[in-house]
Length: 278
Image 1: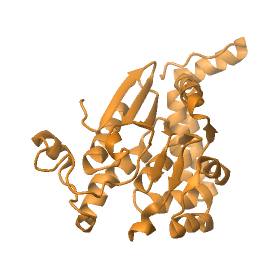
Image 2 (image 1 turned 30 degrees about the vertical axis):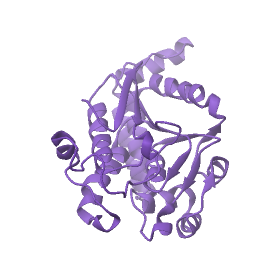
Image 3 (image 1 turned 90 degrees about the vertical axis):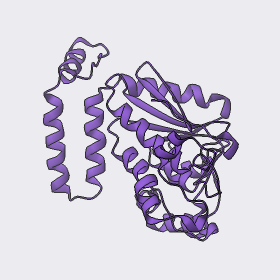
Image 4 (image 1 turned 45 degrees about the horizontal axis):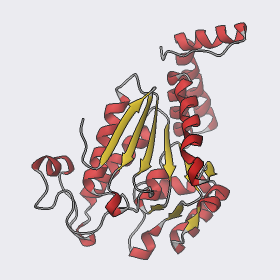
C-alpha cells in the first residue's frame, strides 16, 4: 500500500511507521488516522513482521489532532485521499461523534488490538491525540527533547484517542486527573518518573538504543508475545479467577507450537533459541 501521510519501511522482521506531516509537527488529521489503521491492518496479516515502531518525522512525534481548516481532504486534495479519509472536520466545531469514533477511534482500537508489539519512539512534541497515540503503544521510548501534554482542557475539549482509558491504567486515577485537568507540559524525565515512558535516551543515542530493543523483540517467539499481550489487556478488566483461566488457555496454545519445542530444546542444549513463529 502507498500512503500520503505515513512512511512505511520493513526489514529484518521490523516495520517502521513514520508519521509524515513535518510541516504540521505531524498533527493527526482524519487521513493520517485512516492510513495508520490501514497500515496496521496490513502489517497484522504479514507473518514476516514481528514488531512495529511508530515515530514522527522532523524531530516531533505528533502535535495532536489537526483542527485547522484545509489539509489532505480540502478541495485541492486527490479523490483517493478524500476517499481514504472519508471526512474530516474543517474546524473544531465540526468534530462529530461519527468522525471521532469511526476515524480516530478506529486507529486507536486497531493499535490497541494489534497482536504484535508496538514501540513508540518519541522526540519533541507529543500532545493531545499525539500523546495518547504514543501511550496506546506497548512500549514508549523517548529522547531527552520529548515533551508530553494532555492539552485538551486548554482547548475547551474533552480527552480523546483513548486518553480516559489509558491514563488511569498507566499512572492511576488521581495522577491522570492532574495531567488532564491542568494540561501541563511534562518532560520526558518526568514522564518516565510517573510511568508514562519506559526509558529516556539522549537524542543522539535514541535510535540505536531502540533498534536494540526492536531486534530483541523481533527475535522473541511471536505467538507467545501475542498471547502475553492479549492476556494482559484482557486481565485489566476481569477477576483473578478469570485471569487465571485466560492464562491457562494462552499457555495451552503456546505449548502446542513449534516455538515452544524449540525454546525447550535450546534450554536443554544451553543455546539461544531460534523462533520461527510456528
